[in-house]
Every structure is written in C-alpha cells, then in structure tokens.
Length: 226
View 1 (cartoon, rainbow, N blue to C red):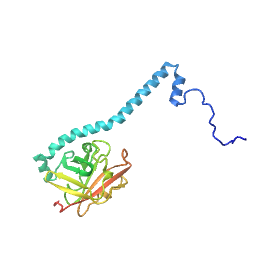
View 2: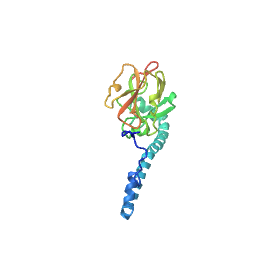
View 3: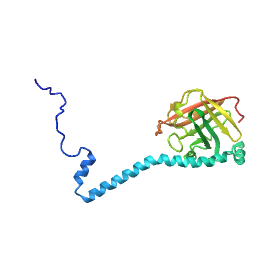
View 4: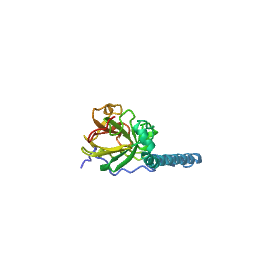
C-alpha cells in the first residue's frame, strides 16, 4: 500500500531538550551565575505582579467596607439631613442608601462621581436631581472593585425593585426595561426626564471599561417636589 503523503505523522520523535521557551532559556544559561540571578529576579518580579493583580480587588473591597461603616452613621445624622434639605451635601458624603432586594445589594451612595468619591462603591451624579425627586436621578457604581455593588446589575429584569432611602424619606423605583449597553461617550442616558426616573451606570463587560451597562427604572407613586 502506498503511504498517504498528506497524513499527519504520529511516529516522529520529539527533539531532545525542553520544549518550554523559558525552560530552554534557563537550560542555555544554566552555567552562567549572572544569568541565573537575572532569571530569579524576573521570577520574583512576576510573582509580585501576580500578587498585586490578585490582591488589589481584595484591598479595595476592604477599603470600601471600612468607608461604608462611617457613611452608614453619617446618613442618620441631623447634620446630613439639614445639608440634604438645603441641597448642600458635600462630595464624598452620604446621600442615600440604595437597596436592590433581588440582587442582595445594600450600599450607601455618596455625592459625586469622582474617583475619590467612588471609592465608597457608588456615587450620585451631582448634575442630576436628588433621589426620589422629579427628573432623572443618576448613580454610578463599581462592578469589580470597591465592594462591587453593581457586579450583577446585568441580572436585573423588568419589574425588579430598587429602593432609595434618603435622610428625609424613602422611595421605590421599578425597572422599566432589561439592562442595556451603551458606548462610554453616550451620555443620552443621563438626559433630563419629565417624570421620576432612576438611571444606574457601571462598566461593561466585567473587568473592562470599554462600554457602560445601564439600568433604568421608574419612580412608583408621586415624585417629591424638587
């Protein structure tokens, strides 16, 4: 029988020596002390980088948990109530408690969406109305770090409830459509609305800032006067 010239050979012998590129480098430099020290140093650097990548989310979660503890007490203070009523809440201060029962989310939202403010986990766009007021109340939140309160925002469905507890009262919003994705420069989701609306924004996909995941909800019952 004539052999098929196009058939993959299964009897070819592997060349001697390590197949892994790094192993070949190590083998070739094995007799040189300076090279061994270099490889050891590179391995140590790579290990430190790996620890940093894996440890960073843990660090941010611990930091956010500590911050949330202080914000929880501030939310109930008479001083914050007065600041809230006069629309004078400072950046980084407590503004509202956001609860999503279906996702087991319970986080204090601060005023502002700067990097510093968002270390609390979630922040209120200062240009938008206060929670429970007429208009489009907008809140941004982290998805993979700083407590990742919006980690599973994509699992929300039409009809799911979102509760905002402020220093002067509580209101409930109902999700009006399934979560959707927009480009990071699409700010139309923050446009003013004539009725009570809530817009939640976070990064998409997880561990990336390529796009934004959006959830929008309608205020149940009459909106508070602005």
